[in-house]
Image (cartoon, rainbow over all chains, first blue to last red; front, side, top):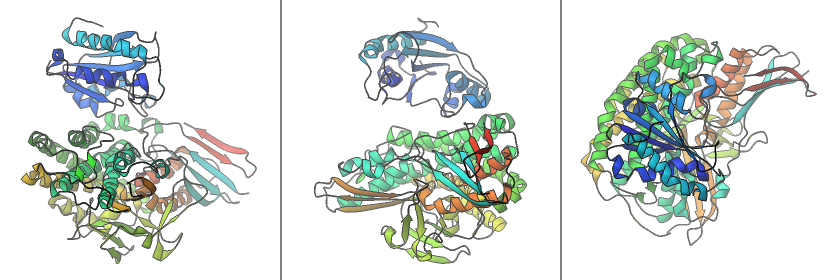
Length: 151
Length: 473
């Protein structure tokens, strides 16, 4: 899995917003992802652009505010040029991809795996709903990387 | 009829603040103030906590410079433990601190200030952000992103996290440096240095366009304060505290900077949550002094590394021995990045850096401790008192932005008096008033920061509260 980059991101102190961190923790030791680079980040920032541009495949893992709590969705990310309104504290996945493309001239396939959150309350543990969904999140990410799961 | 202009929030700074500009009856600027409108309360939060927890707690003060708080806090704890960290741990703390200066300065220069320097202060605000820089000068944008990434990667490789690492602990650091990690950092240094050299070259060429701003952006006589090493070079971790006047003459050199209450006062004003530190000998509010990159270069005899010293010589050749304009914080910041990268190479080139002896252990042996270090924005002091069980009873923090508070207020007033002439507001006026604050790179909490365009609401009010003019963006 050399060249694969997995970025789980969100606020690990806001219950389900930390699902990316929890998934990254499991994926970092998953033998199916041996050789992949797995990162946990609070948010997508410009500094990730170089890592993204150098990867052969990028899988982002985040919580979603929409959807039935615990449901897992997958979508392909298309690079989008940045505008002032798309960039304040963080970058969204499309703008992140656009930045990588503009800065370094290349952007690999990028897939976002989202788990619909049940709670964003303070807390460093997932809600029961997302705790139950976490194995599916890991399976979907692994499936995207091995080619078994296509967005 | 006296009137008031309010800029709220101030954009492209770390934290939340507003600026008010008071007009007199003739429509001229009578006064201006920089208000910090957020409250953090860390000095109270830590009361009742075991002192060993403080470095990790205090690192949460800031998402940009957590390492500075980590280090100042750990040094205060070292004193309470009456322990001396092993030499390798001191060098490792230095490595992490230098990496943080690099990434923080990169954020300030490239992400927050370079849009003004590239496009000019009169440019349309819609393009004045890093993405605008990307379109106009992609190499500059790449260098900024790359330098910030470099510094963050060094921090992460040592502490396990880019933000809020808990690796610096009372008595040293939590784990020794692995040879692979050292080699990875060393391998990344040449590109980081090349990026800094390119940025310095670009800045020195570009700055000639801004002679007027350089003469108005906080250009006034003041004292400057910073740590220096035994040879008079810039020092970020330890050393003695040196204060120089506007003419460069040494006003004070304190072998032990820790008893800060002997030389610094802290005033509180009702219009800001930020304390105003002042040099006691000069009184309040006259005891204005500045800290941070500009001050460190002004107080030091040299940078202490070859390339940075060559740049310092050129800088002083252009601007004089003790430049008084805060506009030159930008230039000083770049020279400091270069110096930090050179120092990183020195430290990591020593085999002693891999020593497994990185932590001394001790119990509570003193009831008071003070840690002093240079944060990216200036001198940082953490002062704690504990009971016999090591439970924190009291804490006081004197942060760089507090040292600079009086100077920032003077700077805002100076810029406002020069550029704000009428009761109709223009974007270039507002941008210059904000930009002078950005020179100081104030760190107002700093768990949040803004890059690029954020909502700015400015009102021109009559004495009865009537809105005479209003701008939103």
